[in-house]
Image (cartoon, rainbow, N blue to C red; front, side):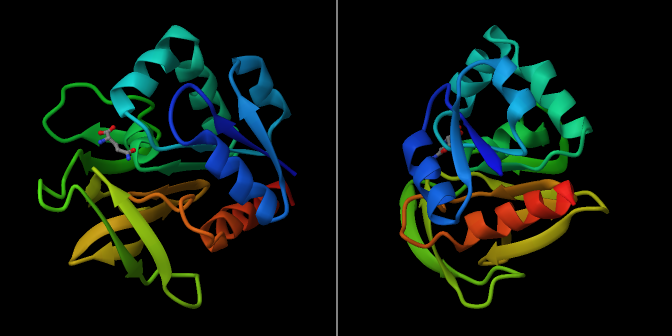
Length: 191
Ligand code: GLN
């Protein structure tokens, strides 16, 4: 099973490491032609405006929309979640617009620019350690979106069929259970 990590900017190596710890093959993705070979893809954290700009420049917008239309699993973390969203609060345009969520960028305010906490995630047995860095949150979800985790009543992880999104950075700890969860989604989509 090959899982790509979109490598235009952001936390790429850390995700590759987690994918491999979870027992799949991680692929550093820099060109659209590589997508054909993948069973699933992770869009990492970083700066969504930068990743979005590079995605447009390198033809990834149409290519990733086509990837999603084939029902191939996609997992967006932090900035990656913003890139998947149908809408970004206070912004006229969103990026890929594949997932039926509205997100607010940098939603945790100054004092909480970055922090760690333990989170309960639906489908994962025990709490996971989550690292938030200038994180977005999910303000609104469509009818077919399942909420997987909330922090202080605000949604920080969700799933819509083959799409998975998390506000935090699951690749910055040694806990790869969320990556395993995603790899299970990929396995199920192949079956
Ligand atoms: N604040 C960033 C953005 O809006 C996301 C931060 C992150 O990915 N750690 O794109």
